Amino acid sequence: MAAAKNAEDVVTVDVYTAKGVLSIGHRYLDVRTVEEFIKSHVEGALNVPYMFITQEGKVKNPEFLTQVSAVFKKDDHLVVGCNSGGRSLRACVELLNDGYEHVNNMEGGYSKWVDSGLAGDKPGEELKTACKFRP
View 1 (cartoon, rainbow, N blue to C red):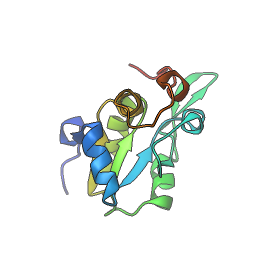
View 2 (cartoon, one colour):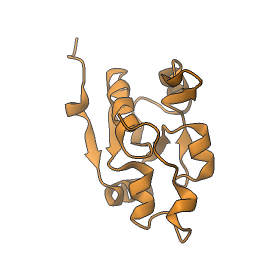
View 3 (cartoon, rainbow, N blue to C red):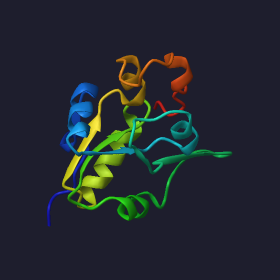
View 4 (cartoon, one colour):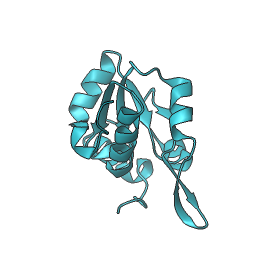
């Protein structure tokens, strides 16, 4: 059996590389909350939240891997993003350990995507949410 994957095993790409590979058919998995996703997201992204905000605080989505497997295959080429890169890194580790073969973490998350001008002409404040998930 293969050794368990950890954060050092995750391939991280910058937002420009992410945009490039998305343009040739890679898929974007947005692991932010539904509320964050609805506000604004990468075009063509699919949303499977990695964590939920509850009255008790942040809670990991217990159905994350099941929900991802409903929309992606293990050999799909995925770019995984959140708001700033923390949740997506943890999600990538879980995906690798679940047998997904081509998983890239988008460095800086959607905030970096917006700050880099890749989200279009709207002001960044309208697109981004304050990150509630920083460790």
